[in-house]
Length: 325
Image: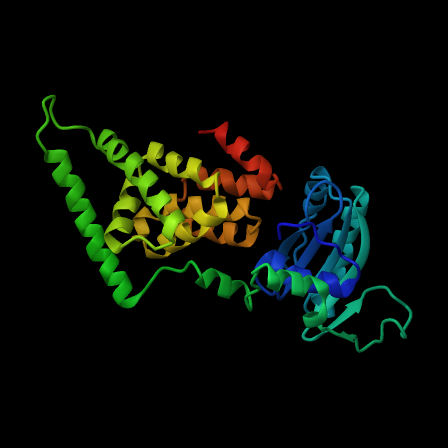
């Protein structure tokens, strides 16, 4: 969310987590951190493993307080939640609650008062929570689970995929024809041609998308994917993304879904970058999965993964990347 969250009680915390992650977690350990100079953030990891590096990362970024939430049955959540809470305490992050969430009920771990914390748990009713109302009003969406979020950037199938394959062949034929074209000094090299064609094309396409929000045609998308194999063209797109990442997020989602698999690395990395800038770390990591599946050594994706793992704040990400490209 854009504004700092005010976490007043466990109900607020439980309500906030799905909107910070973008989906409702399951079989997960979540640390909801807040206080200090940063807005609230939620860090999720799969159970039963506990990555205690979460604690120093949050401390290093100035978070002062945290709530630890385990999503699942007691035998998978409780020990992991207590271990993470202990690590946070060692690094100076005050843990104000340790909760277990299962189905439609929640428990406060370690509370001996059965009046406050009955053995059967307390019902979850996040619909009335202030955080939920604020999130819905701001247009945030919490999908059912992580798989639902992954499907929002999954490759297109059926007729849409067939149309993009045809468009990709046309784009490759177009580049080949340009490379064979007449020139007083001989045929230009492919990198030179990609850069010369790509920078004005990307600039025009991004400005047009920001103005009317119309997704590019199949031919424009295929041509874009091919042009982004040029690092100067990709970096031009990256530079534009810094101006209005929320606007560019939708374009790179659409492009990552439609682009031919062997051209996915660049647009998926740009999607990861814009997602992280707007605070959607879960979508950023899923986009990086797509990029690194397409090109396991793609440097921008590898560096972004390192930046996210280190907990570098989105506001500092541009400068960190700029030092490497």
